[in-house]
Image 1 (cartoon, helix red, strand yellow):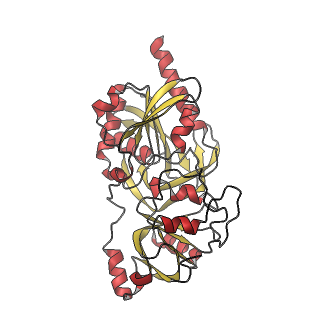
Image 2: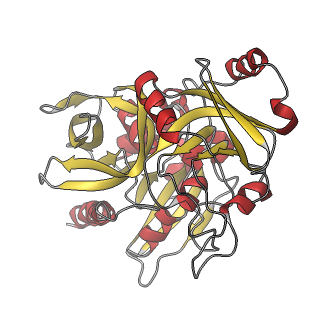
Image 3: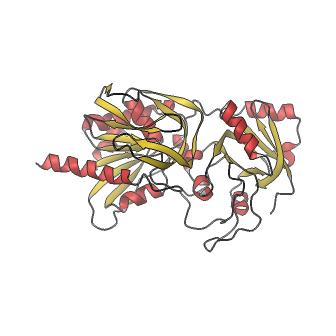
Length: 380
């Protein structure tokens, strides 16, 4: 494994350091240190645009077992700023494997660190909160610890980061319905994953993926039957343009479904504040309860911000009444919103489950029912 011979250093913004070995590319990188509790699905995690500007620490000690294949990417590139693993495999084994994780990280210039105590690092982040971090190897590590720490402190913070323009599609594209077309949706790309339009298309939906910079006039002029708000990176407090798009959609009465970052944008459009979580939810094993059914789902998450909305009783908003529809059972964070007077709802997590369990796939069916129910009412 190339690079494992090189010493490397991980430096947190509070001054704590971890020494290990380089994994992937040699050099330096900066980002927000976050931990992911998944034991599998690392390829989907790496290519998820929601991880832009983050250094991902894997809590599972053995990473890379199944290598890298040609089917599981969620976008055209790796988005993480850096990668940290305890014990990456030297030789992957899987019938779909086309190479090793180390080779993929190296090919895309992703600086990583391995052979460190990721359990101690995760415990530190849980106690102190997500924070900026730098990974250094090769010549980049040949500086004093004070200089390396200053470089970390000079890097960008996630709070206040506006990252949508970095990840959105430069031009619209269509993912056509599989089989007979039932309706159409304009998916606002705030950092969309490939699985989302695929799952909608499998339900007979024409998915028009559009750039995040689209104007409200242009969006409504597409005359799609509904609107979808995707996941994405950054601080939702900076997403003023997306919030205005949502308000225009709600005023027009178009059915809307948002996930992850899109959920936070809907929350802001309804008049709620967003706030930064201490260390966020990242992984494929987060328990969420659907308050309308009482069912508990195991879900896939990647969010460091949340919507500040009361979880008890109906909520008065500029667009009518709304309610919290889902909560996380670990910490009671709001995980879903449902509008009661306009056709809109959202969830904080990833129902496309790439990677992750499929407990929440019904939400795409619920969206289809919402749109078709509105069309039936309009025709009657």
